[in-house]
Image (cartoon, rainbow, N blue to C red; front, side):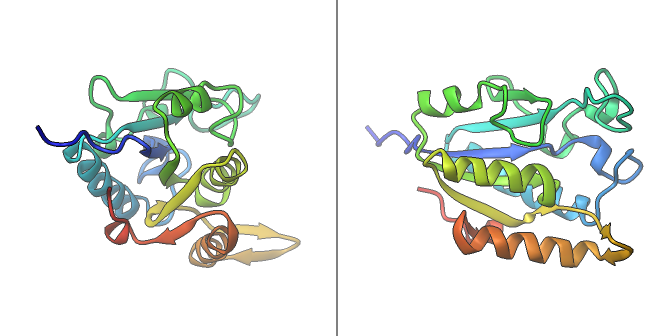
Length: 187
């Protein structure tokens, strides 16, 4: 009988939701390419029978313009839609662990290594990767399976590609192994 897959490795897909794709209320640069890379990684985890966790954000903040509860924009994008039996965590904050059962779920598997991808790199991905590291998980981040957008501060604009590079570099310095999805080996 073959050995069971190593369930200590879990794929966590963060906020791959319609509002981030073309036509959505908060379109990100590179969302389609990132969604395709995430879908490829998701297919590999499914084929290896490794656990997958989808995280979905609903925005409850007054005045919010995207991820509104009950809207198509808040749904997980079809390219990365959960299959029956795959966990879906609902969150209301950038940190996927805050006021959710994600930590309980991961500890129950038991997970020791998380492979993360998703959207928005500079917000929910960054916050969740740092939290996972602080909680003692080994973290890998699929750089090409993440997307973000341009930002501005103090009258200066920062292009999305520069935001992406800065956040991936920061996360890769301490908090995660950062590499393209195809380079992340499964157990």
